[in-house]
Image 1 (cartoon, rainbow, N blue to C red):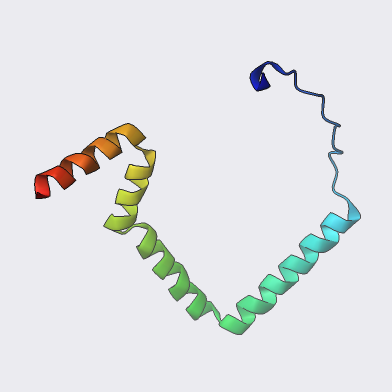
Image 2 (cartoon, rainbow, N blue to C red):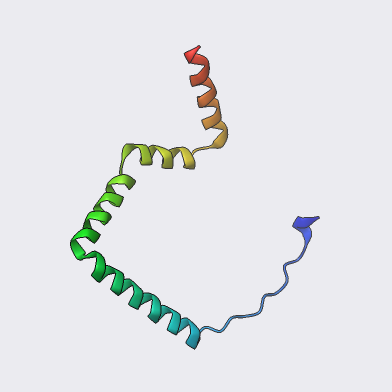
Length: 86
């Protein structure tokens, strides 16, 4: 059965970063700086504020609470609400 298989030992990865990783990170940072300069700090702050408002909206908070709730209880509540409408 799948739950009784022993896990195979994975090869240990080196702790240090490789040259490719550092170069890729440097390129990503440069791209980010360029994009930030093109967009402008004020526009970037407006976008951040809009994202923050959306995440704190009552609808998004309700979605998060439903997602964290027990699936059976959510289903029971939905069936109860649908039955109540009829």
